[in-house]
Length: 117
Image (cartoon, rainbow, N blue to C red; front, side, top):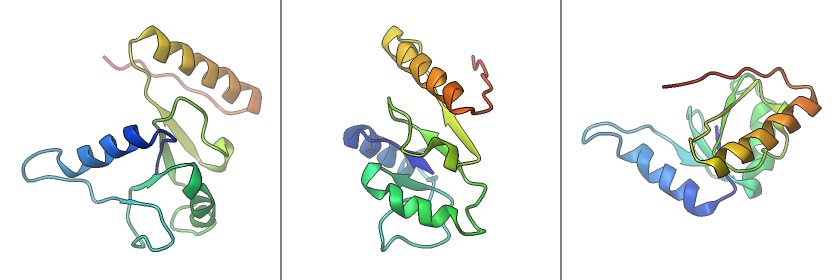
């Protein structure tokens, strides 16, 4: 699951998943009431969050992970087994991530930081 409440950012990510390489792509779809069943990747915004909640109630998606591409927390952060946050090197991005981290802490989430280089 990929969440973002910024439509332009989500659209760019959508396009990138279709064009990883000349012959490769990641099958995905925006989560709508008519979305294909059984995909491994769904793109979700705030409006489609209720559809995700319904999917999480099924055995197929009960241990789903969420990639948060938003500057904010997802609507129900503790509903998923794991949330991945990628933080860029820019000061603004890092400050927003610190705020999200503190909020996750206050909610009682089990947090782990991994430095990628």
